Length: 302
Image 1: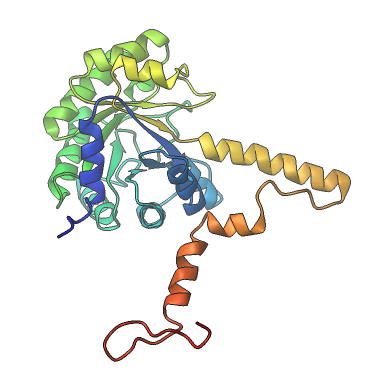
Image 2 (image 1 turned 90 degrees about the vertical axis):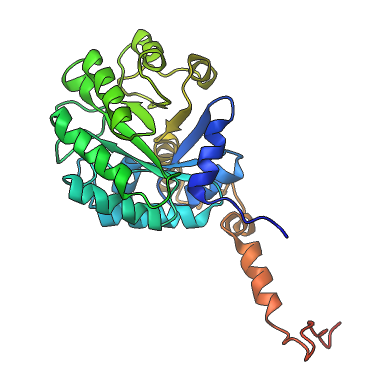
């Protein structure tokens, strides 16, 4: 008897038990999630900034929990690899955090991260943020840990205290979050190479590195991040920022030449990449009714 496939949380935990670092590029829609999976990456990260942008907003805390959870669920349903999602501040106090974890978990996510910013929050690489008192944040982490029905569901604690207070406070908060039940630490926006290198050394548990082009953190080679001891690297803007540049280029060409540009991907390939072959097979499967003995009848053409 074939064994059942692992759940998304169990699959992610299995990856984390392996040597090395998981790289999870960021997706904001199902096209991006599928492309990441097809490229051979072991996990997908749902970017909060990208999700906000799909609804026409900047990453200023303007998106609700239900909007984020719905998008996360669509991504998780579109791919077979684990999806880790941004859950911002948990959208309120520990009661809101409890519901957030439940909503994300039942939509098939492998894990999420919750931060200590005040609400409304901002992208971690923007200025003028605030963080809540540590005791209030730890209450959220305890609530998130207790809300899980699957103990494998990954709870990532994020702190923005480096920008608001200092690096030492950020480390202190991450270690306190582990004691409160977090599984991984996300110390956002260390500002020097030395600070990046210190994170896995000073934080007493698995660490996530946020790789943001143009952000406050120096961009490291992923191989260097792995050697430093990070267990997970997310690249939230890799598709979002690339897409903006590609959109600008193709639209500028179209406007200047007044011709439809040559497409880099064929029409057939476009649909294949989002599952056309699977749906074609289903359509063919049901064209011929089964025989009385349960076998499939051969069509007249055969």
